[in-house]
Length: 257
Length: 279
Image 1: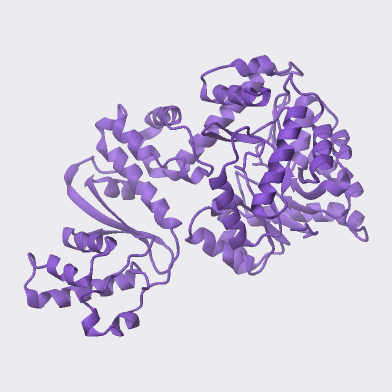
Image 2 (image 1 turned 120 degrees about the vertical axis):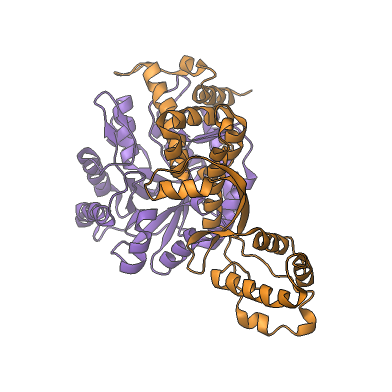
């Protein structure tokens, strides 16, 4: 290994807290001793990454409170040091960390709040695409409808939570106390940018969630109709789906073909 | 990409985006953080595209890790190249430092030892990166808090040697020079005077926090009086070079940053009027 490579490894080990061999390479000078000089870098490393977690997961931080937040930061930095060139992705594994690490694992709502906040970020800067317009649907010949595949906008994300994570997030965002954490039957959400590029989250029932999931999986329109047979009279399905599609168009969830 | 004198610019920061689009303030150009646009779309690109309609834009990266002994990160360079194609910046910069070791990124601008090995390493990497990107880059000096025993030359001799070896040009952060000068007890003007004038493509001005025994380069304060003084003395010799205020934290109002920018303009324009740009 070259001298330069070894020096750089010592520097990273110092930041990770696994070795202080870098001290042997530092010249004593001025009013600061070597340890003080090295601690500037150690502190800056932690402060910068802590700030990213705080910024990307503001409501999670509030939910945790100061002590648990610091515990989470310490643990996350140790377990998942950044392997990304952009800080945008540094917290990508935070939900995984919270769902696998004591004491956070005891509180499933934490991983779900973190997941929700990551999805908001993903919706925020997902790829742009032209929105599907009603005129485009009206121009489709009747014989082509069965094979038609609707396409979701890249920003549209579908998720179901088993706790009141979103309700708690919302309360914290509005500077209110969150409700008591609850385990509940699966509650599904769509997180997406609207026509004005605002990031929105919308509650959808199981039926709508299933339809959107099928669309995401490139399911033809005929199969969307069939999937409704257990819940609706056949004669009602077309009208029901048209109503749904219109609402998705208004929300900006569908992409131009 | 040939750097031209763009005038006086600002780092583009999220709290000011709407205001810049609606009010079109008297700022000559903006600098964006390259990695902030390694995303597919959404508001970041919407705002940037709007701003590009009215202002020249340059790109400034923080994660190239040009000094790292890792293999060059081709995924990173690919993203950078794609972003350059979308932004069409006047030029692209990053820092003379290392940020990544192995597969871990420090997200800090860690200083190089000033050795012959570093010189050869950087020269080789600069050639490789520029060949891949298909454009010349400019590189910024970083502030530092330590000196390696291994260093064989001063930072300024190192920068001058790298310029002679590669032809690379610099984004001179005058605040960083001042911070390092205080932390390592050298004369800031000696540093600045050692770098060939023709090697300076851009100037950064920023703030720091002074703890008496040392200075931390925070970029979260107004430009300090000693940095203004250093800039003014340097700029008199330098001639017109695109200059900007860089604020990374405690961002403040756009008006406050423009006031600082106007101060930079007023300080140096009497000297720069009629002077040709150093080429």
